[in-house]
Length: 276
Length: 346
Image 1 (cartoon, chains in turn blue, yellow):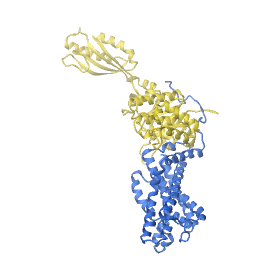
Image 2 (cartoon, one colour):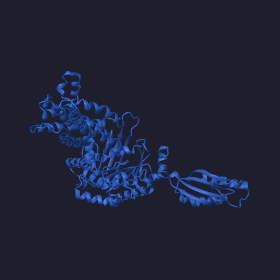
Image 3 (tube, chains in turn orange, cyan):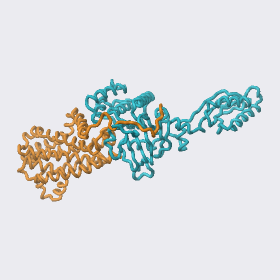
Image 4 (cartoon, one colour):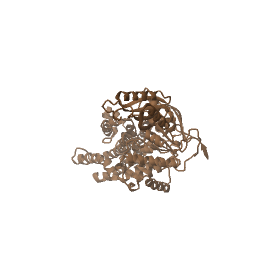
């Protein structure tokens, strides 16, 4: 062994031979890893995210209407709400739990945190990937809706609004998941799912239109605080405009504000977990 | 363009965690030359891992500066990440991917072109003895295999500096030797290596220079040989001796042993004499001494112990005893640590 000395200057290349890609290419490689892994187990993924909305749709949209406990047109009102629920909650669950597991247990994310791009971009990738999962799950709800209900409300000119609301709803869900996944301590994650997910599920106007809550003013106020309400209402505006709904522009604005708030808080939480 | 800078340079580095009474890293300064194998040796909690955390962009320093190949890590973490490879203390392999995919995706994160990354993955799998496991999932791996794969992964993007945080902790002896050999290979190929360890043998065997850390401070920094040489008084010479038969009487035997001890203690090259075992010929046998008048002594000497064997033998002869056994003891990095901190390393 030859003892080196700290004072000996050495000649090194300013940039290494390998690995000098720009951030876009690094970002795509990290995104590709998640898509690659999920793509291999697409069936498992769909079973994870589609079963709950499928049963909600079946019991509330089919069983209750067949038995006469709900009006026949209730299914039309319910379907956009269930699609909204699927998109938002899939987004949330695709970031929250994996991040808790990654940061607290497997540490698998460390290799990506050491990739040559800013740490905030790693968080952004998580949100984008979760939103892609959420959109796939929401899309799958359309054939399922046709299968269970016989038909689903659809208008061709509703497409742009429906897509805009779903994309924003998926991103907001993922950003809420990023916030929860990085702020809630690992040992509290079970409590989080019970305490946060259940209220989110029932105060998001999935099962009822928001304007109809005028008689139940306090509940109307509570539901107005849930971002999911604006996904449900926005989709209703696109798919069943005859049902009273919140104006689309308000839905889109509320979702943009939610995305900004949860995106900012979530990325801050991510940075705190990623960098000591 | 080429620049002349140290591979790693750290100046007055401090890491303070809120609500902690002492700094995790407390004013550490050192530089690592290109191609050097540099070790940070210290017990758990000494601040080694935090220092490496700062150097690998995962821990934000409170004060001071740290650079890799001239790039300021705090100011340009993304640029720094291109230059470094990291082997963490804990297995953080991607369990959703196969062995080969772990290497390929890592290279993709670092923008290594597809053809290049396929080639490098095959080479590294071969070099690290993992070629026959290439398509396996990593969750079936033993600690040693996981460690090998993590070192291979860190090399996929050809970093200028590789950081290994306690690379052999928890490995069996064979796996440990394998990792040591790979680290020597890295040294041969000119990659700068920074490793942490609490194993003094590892530090002494592998590193060109070693920094001894305790309680967040760098207490000493030099080649392992120079650090131990600094402990001149810590050379030891262990001798076994028996009284010559000419001094048959039991009382006389005890006197001879006392004479030997006194003579050795009075010698200028001997700091101190410690009696390990003694039998004064009164019937009971000392642990390592011969029956009927003998003893084992440890001499703390101030010069090379080998050079003192002959003079000691001569001194014994003059006193009427003879040398039966010699053991030369040179100080280790453990002794250096004890000398610096007053505590054992573990």
